[in-house]
Amino acid sequence: MTNQSAQDWLAEELAESLDEDFELEMEDAILSQEIARIYKDRHPDTLDRKTYLTGLIHLQAELIRLQDWVQHTGQKVIVLFEGRDSAGKGGVIKRITQRLNPRVVRAVALPAPSDREKTQWYFQRYIPHLPAAGEIVLFDRSWYNRAGVERVMGFASEDQVEEFFRSVPEFERMLVRSGIKVIKYWFSITDEEQQMRFLVRIHDPFKQWKLSPMDLQSRIRWEHYTKAKEDMFARTNIPEAPWYIVEGNDKKRARLNCIDHLLTLLPYEDVPQEEITLPERVFNPAYERATLPPELYVPPKY
Image (cartoon, rainbow, N blue to C red):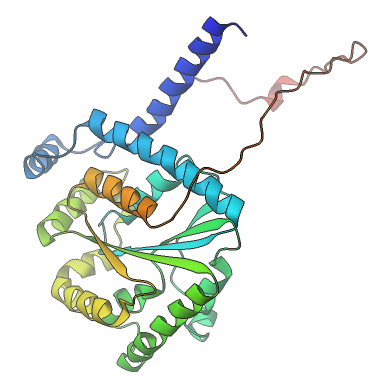
């Protein structure tokens, strides 16, 4: 490959990478013009796309360094993402994992517990998802469901909630003593911002799947969730695993701020890398490639 062809190939790869970013950033793909206008008026100081993508790509490069260090040194890391419905937890998790190795960094979003799981020790169903050496696990909601949605919606009794608050500090201290780094983020948005995001989901067919009956109930119980959140902070903000609050009204700033902060919590550094050499292909003059039947191929519609 000549230098020029290599440069052309790299330029094409970069363009394709930016296309992936653009696809992820199509947040308002089918919004009505009126909703889009209102949303823009509510966020006059939002980051422009170029500034945001430049910052994101820089942080994602650092995340790759972090990933290599975690794998090389055998670290075990848990990051919990909590917050109200539509607060932006899933968005930041997407941007963290976008360029990382899913065998090293994986996201966990558990469904509602089954009838069998409801009879288990509360933390039991989370145990299989804890990291082994050289892994980072991102929980899109976690055991703190009990302090939030389960408490507010009446899925857990006050005795169960009280037992949770007694148990969770010791549970997390036990994780830390075992060598697991526990990091907890709460994404904070205002009442008005959540209302706007729910309206976006209602009017955007690409996002309607995100809106559940539970989400709609959370609007009615806004103040109940606020009280539950305050109790949760008061009783579970421990030195071994403190809470960190991310201001989430501006999605782009929230993502960049969260990733940047996450990187400061771990003392990662460059690790030795094996030099990669592409071997020459071995040609066998006696081998003749078989002609496969056309019905095996995907139709070239595009």
